[in-house]
Length: 326
Length: 265
Image (cartoon, rainbow over all chains, first blue to last red; front, side):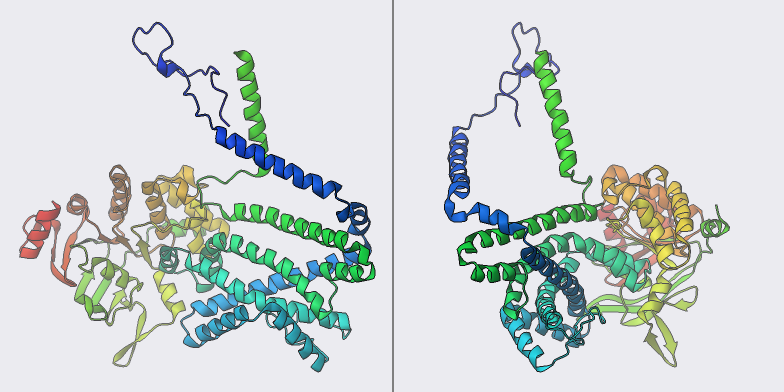
């Protein structure tokens, strides 16, 4: 932030020849005053204060009931299901997306066409339709232990209803997620400079190594922010699994809401806060992953919030010392 | 240093490069129109020519970054990217081509260093990835090569933290890490600020003196005069004339060569 005007600064005095009073160049330039900005700030602060005040004092929200529900085992069980479904779908979706992107970028017209059609289909069909379709499908076929689209037997399902619902949810979300992830990954790979492919080829690096160590790490720089965006959509998208009778975070709250109709609002707030927490955690993780893959892309790494705080404090201390000395 | 690293540092036997009647075209546009060229071991060949004459394409055909439609290139008698099958040439597998490229160094105009790897890892990557050296040995080799190009103190830096001249010197060290018998330079100083050109040319000159076969596409006529054993002038996808610099640069016989030189000198 700028210093208050009039604070004397120790600029080296440029020699304006024999000027008796303070030469122009010896003083700091006065910053422009911006009254409009101050007014806008004040208005926004008032609005925010009003909103917070309403949130806290309005009996409609029933914060005591919120406190009662927030850590209830039934909610936490739902949270666990949400996390589980998200984790499996995120990994399977990304793996599927990478394979689809590679197929799309391959020289084989068949692979390209299949990949294109897949992405086209799953981006067109609403997720809820996919889920309910799979749900009915699983009613026809009792054992859903095979049919995981990407990777070997990652899950071992018993024949209990829960496991089947879980499988339906994960498969549905992964199929959907893979279509979007494919586009994210493809965009990332295309963003890598052609010269990198050429240099890798000219050095005779094996094909797999070229992709894993040269192209993909660079592609990740553009993949990560986009994929995290996807991931956040996925976290929220898991709330749809309620419709295939899997009691996730939203599903549990919904069920409790029908048992205790008076608590619907606090239950929705419980869900809201949990989703906010999940998204925040993902954002923090995103920051550090991005920072990791920024190595070499910028001349120096962006500072972590902790480092920013530390330099901020140092600057502040220096400024206080300077002004005390005047 | 381990024996393996020392061996990797020893001077390599310089290679012979033969270009056999190479034709290359994009659609109807003929880029190379029957080029024959023999580069003897240890020879420094500079390729000159106006832009669009096909000189970069010729260089890229040598390490098979571009596939010629007709003709082939051989290094030490071994055809690159193709093999003889009866009366015809047949394309090699990608893996085989990648192995062959290890014997041919290539230095790009835009350096094309790997920005996410440190300078040391840029140089050490290829010997490790191709299984020639272990990680420690490759890094030892990389340090020695970086010292040779005058960058012993920048091993931990990332390419974007270096000047253009330094980046190009890293790129040269990277090309050297596979002990190539021939190194190809595609306008190695064209992307550099004028004051940085000298440091890169000095490194190339040092390589020339060490007896490695070099093929250099450049616009640095002064450098060609000083360092080249042979100058090849290319125009319209054909070699117009070639010979020692004293002949081609000072007493060109062809109108087109004279015309080109009068523009660049």
